[in-house]
Amino acid sequence: MKGLIAKKVGMTQVFDESGNLTPVTVIRVEPNVVVATKTKETNGYNAVVLGLEDLKASRTNKAYAGQFSENITPKRHLKEFRDFDNEVKVGDLVGLELLEKSRFLDVTATSKGKGFQGVMKRWGFHGGRATHGSKFHREAGGTGECTTPGHSLKNIKMPGHMGFERVTVQNLKIVKIDSELKVILVRGAVPGNKDCTLIVKSAVKK
Image (tube, rainbow, N blue to C red; front, top):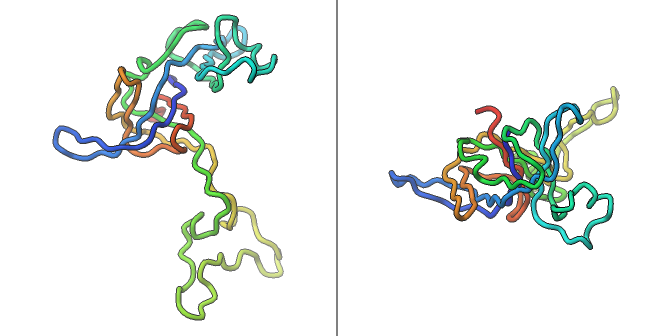
């Protein structure tokens, strides 16, 4: 498994040699610092902990800063990757070169929050007739049962909080990797707002 912590820049479009337009998401990958390594002998499994974005010492407490060695500045974002393919040591930098041989990526992030939404926006309900006197435009309709059991069952699609969930989009094709700008262009959309933190991994199913 190969993975990195990255940032979402936004979306744009590129043209291939045939003139076909492809919508792409621009992902900026700054070098990740190896904060810690875990081995099967000491921890029971092999893993690497990567960090991104320096954090001021005044913004950390002793418990958080204690996991970083003396030569590593505390990082804002930490992520553990199990079964990391490359052999690395604490303090090493890993970047785009890790994904140069990959053709597809899995991207994980927190989706945009939509707040409290009704059933039409949240679940795609059609709603009732939009005619005069309908009184059933955007309502959910009946959600309960009759006398038996006399209550709404679990997993009924109802209004509620929408978005702000951990989402993974799989098998996104890499259109281009620019080592100078430290960006990856992947086909299609990825979850999250602009400048949000992403977890980018080589595709599991490809």
